[in-house]
Length: 601
Ligand SMILES: *[C@@H]1O[C@H](CO)[C@@H](O)[C@H](O)[C@H]1NC(C)=O
Ligand SMILES: *[C@@H]1O[C@H](CO)[C@@H](O)[C@H](O)[C@H]1NC(C)=O
Ligand SMILES: *[C@@H]1O[C@H](CO)[C@@H](O)[C@H](O)[C@H]1NC(C)=O
Ligand SMILES: *[C@@H]1O[C@H](CO)[C@@H](O)[C@H](O)[C@H]1NC(C)=O
Ligand SMILES: *[C@@H]1O[C@H](CO)[C@@H](O)[C@H](O)[C@H]1NC(C)=O
Image (cartoon, rainbow, N blue to C red):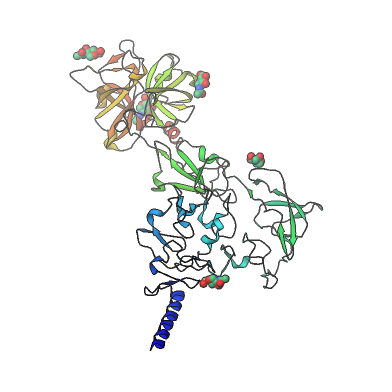
């Protein structure tokens, strides 16, 4: 009887032993069996702490690919170690190195989270971020350590052995790279024992010597014999080559020629140093030549300046303040362009369109209530109003930029005065030169082409125009301008409400190019229009957007400088076609063209 009981115990033990090893199931009655034969409580298995003397309750000691915890799931209040052990979540990244048996709870790989790209970028132990797919690829990519190839991390990762090879250190490389005379596993394990294995042979190219990549953009010469070697060819042992980059390509960092020697160790050929990369910068100028966009560049998730753009840099293009994505392009959250290995952008660069006729003064206390309105001054000390119709053009009255004999002034005698943004509590007054004046001939209208493209802001924006009859024939409007006797710039923003009257009120012969306006009658103040209002835009507001419908044409007269009588204004929609074309010509193209006028690809 006693003997039988003993046998049963042995039998039970045997069964448990097999189950513990094969299925990782721990029988609470017996416990977990360590590799050295001792038993520990099941609760202590895979808890991060090594309870077996040899640690085999956490990490297999014979085969790092194996862990009794490999398939273990952890509850929500636990953190899962790289090998599968579960530890209290509080212990994660708490600088106590001994919570997981492999210390993975303190690896920078898990603890350092990249602020903008946590999925694709992971941290080396040095703190440098590199792309996730560079971890466990056989090669050392971390700049100061080998933490991207550390065995505890890599051995437990998937590596489909049907198509791939696991380096001894744990990295995973495509199978065809075994025994190809190039070291792909940094521990050289892909090129060891090649004598006994069958070599993967390329049937056409003899694989002898050191290879030169086909797409390397090199100009290579044999140093001694001075003949050219083509990319894709092989270089025999003890040959020294001179590498230059082909036209328009260059080495990153330094430009002088580089030398390499092909060396033979036993059966394999290797370069004395890795071959350099020849790169081409992508054109940075297209990111900067428009005021309508701003670009931010990043390289592997880190922000970099948008100049000297190397391949794989991503440029994120956004509309600048007071610009919007052209309607035709739909609603982009953001627009990203990538610099390809050949030094070209993968997409054309978009430009944005000015936001017109909108005031920000309701939201931004410092913003102008008429950001489209400007002052126009000449060397004759004439002052008029004007309206920004595009970032390069201001519309005003022709007589404002004429001499008394009606000769149009030279453009150098005309200045546009703009109220810019607040700086130290004061509005900045910007004086902009005029580079060209287009007059309207018989009609009292002129377009001033500015010598610079305005930088738009909440205070500097063009007005909108419209063909909508409902708006164009509105009976109520307003304008801004310098009132009588004021030369102070602040007063240029004096607002006057207007009534639009039937044309006949301004004169029997007035034709369809004109409208007739008068200050709205207000009991408490006698509003008048003065010479200084000339050239100011007649504006109609509709649904929060402001449109120009006319340009005031108060020509100087000897008798009156101010009046509350009806005054003529030129209808914006009736200005000569040449002036309209000139304004339309300021519109930026939707996409950037290159120097030859060809679309960027
Ligand atoms: C380690 O374990 C893996 C998975 O069980 C197995 O494929 C491999 O052959 C083992 N390696 C050694 C050296 O025993
Ligand atoms: C290398 O040459 C290119 C093209 O001539 C030039 O743009 C680049 O600045 C040079 N780089 C260095 C580091 O001199
Ligand atoms: C504007 O023109 C004046 C000469 O009239 C010149 O001195 C000044 O530099 C010009 N300003 C700009 C910004 O071009
Ligand atoms: C109105 O008269 C002006 C000349 O004073 C002329 O240039 C313009 O074309 C006329 N407009 C219309 C709509 O007839
Ligand atoms: C309003 O101003 C005009 C022009 O200055 C003047 O002729 C008129 O008498 C004034 N009317 C009143 C009611 O003050």
